[in-house]
Amino acid sequence: EHFREYNRVVLLVLNMATLRVVLFDLDDTLWDLCATMERAHREWTIAMCAHGPSGAAIAEANTDWTCWTDASPSFATVKSELPDIAHDLTLVRRETMRRACVSVLGAAQ
Image (cartoon, rainbow, N blue to C red; front, side):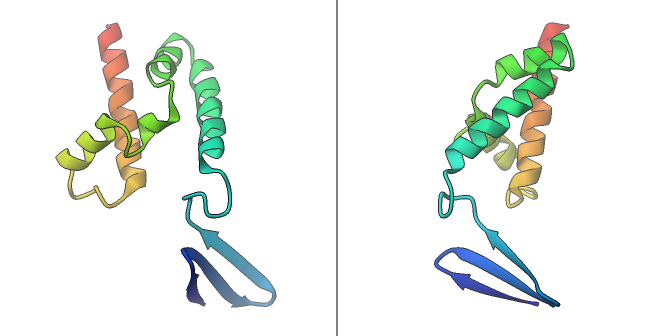
């Protein structure tokens, strides 16, 4: 296997028969990231609401998909408080979501 980078699009070609996999970043290079993230957030909201009043409260407190991105102050807080995971945006996003859940559920008690 090997990687080639073409204008911020990374191709990974596996030498396994005819299998080819294309990997690319999410910066509007090949599709509208905002629309994709908005749809994903709507689905997340539906899933949270299906978990009853607590899930609905968490969804209502986090109505915009950007609350799970660098645009969010809570995202920046997690990165500054946990510098050892700041490079891993998946871990930062999970911790931001965990804190959002704790914040909403703790306030409800």
